[in-house]
Image (cartoon, rainbow, N blue to C red):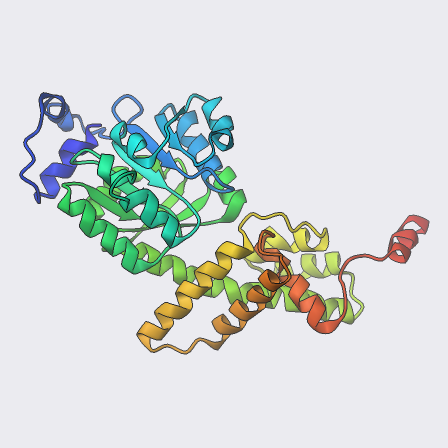
Length: 344
């Protein structure tokens, strides 16, 4: 909670007069350790594939965490670790100094952050900080930042990359946009989740994440096309992946998803539905910038075809299914393959 006093000192945009509560916090700012479990209460909105693991790291570090989910039962694992559940983002923010959100779509971000009745900003005390870790529109990040500033608060856009494994292992890349001084003060929290990279002012974290998604999109197409080609050429696919992983074709996507594809494990570490959303934002931003990125457009069309086959709740590695259909082949081992392996 000592973060609140520091934030007021670097961002004087409000005539807010500190109450005795905040004044008592001001006396502690000289100690240097502004973020700690004993001084900072956290809020967390969104406990999906990524959010639940991320929030758990903060609980394990000893922070008091207030949680909102639309369905209380989805937060049960966090509640069993000591989190406190509230029935709205506003209620969470009223009891928190820093409020994190990681939800599905920009419309969800707008609702949980800016709704005048139930949104987090409406309950956040002056000096508090909103941290949105959803992949969302850069323009929305700028809008939230402006609204927070008008309320005497702060907002950081900090989308992440690393998938479910990165969330579980606290090895995410975090792309932060907003006031650098605020990002620096939040580093003890970000360090519990991964590594933070300061990208610039409001919205720049989102722009970085979208660039990340452009890169991943074409990488995933290449990974899946390579597997289709290797299969048609009669190569052992496991041996093929091992061989190329240590060469120039090696990538994080190959490491994370290569064997999942071979094992027909399409459980979502990152949903196709959410990736289609991200690529759509990328394409809109490209149009605004006057950019032509044909690889991005192709990847978005292939992922859209998965949605058309009702495969939107699968993970992004399910892209191989679209390419299998295009070529009328399957990488799934046949019964004869399994029988041959047993006989060998």
